[in-house]
Length: 250
Image 1 (tube, one colour):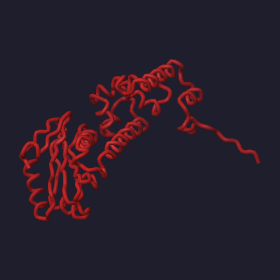
Image 2 (cartoon, rainbow, N blue to C red; image 1 turned 135 degrees about the vertical axis):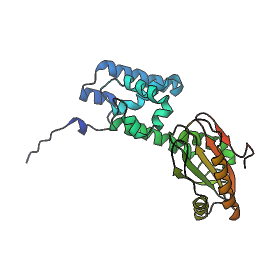
Image 3 (cartoon, rainbow, N blue to C red; image 1 turned 90 degrees about the vertical axis):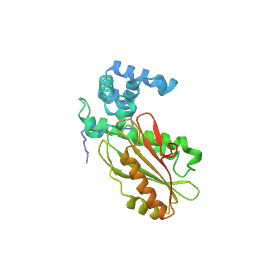
Image 4 (cartoon, rainbow, N blue to C red; image 1 turned 60 degrees about the horizontal axis):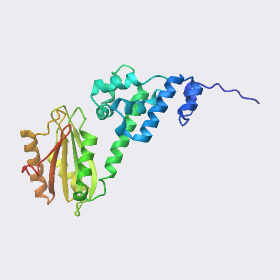
């Protein structure tokens, strides 16, 4: 028995090269040439050879194979500020931008997840003191561009090796609920000997508030009672961070 199949645009294999997809889907040659030039510039000069909107174009190529994505890339940069902020933007806000659909959101979030995974790999299971710069970079990668506060805890063993990195709470633009008992309870579950507290300030200013200081002291008191050390509390701003330890607040 002979079977016939009807192929649709969505049935094209995702692993085809852009040139193959272009021939199948009728991509205009000027778009194909532009994409080739951008790729060549990236391969020869890396990300530093490209402005944010062109780097974003490279990400958008797979999500939108047949259209010129430069206007959308510029629109996203204008809306959120820079490449990192676009990747970190909430999916709901991204979808409010004209031209952004599920495919675009998916591509952006895949790149964001890859960046987080790569940054985390440089600190997880590593000695914290010897990888401090990587730890700070990881904090900025995962938290600096968030629009709401997030509270994370790095759990360390007796040798100050990072054994776990966990989000403990999400909040609003200027507050995140943190419960000291839950913090130390989780530390005991993981057999952690020390903690590094981290949260972000969406305003961009890492200066601690009175509530930040009070919350840190409450966690420290609960941890001290169980022999758990609080090494530091780091507040992440847009382009800088503040260490409670360095500032004499712990």
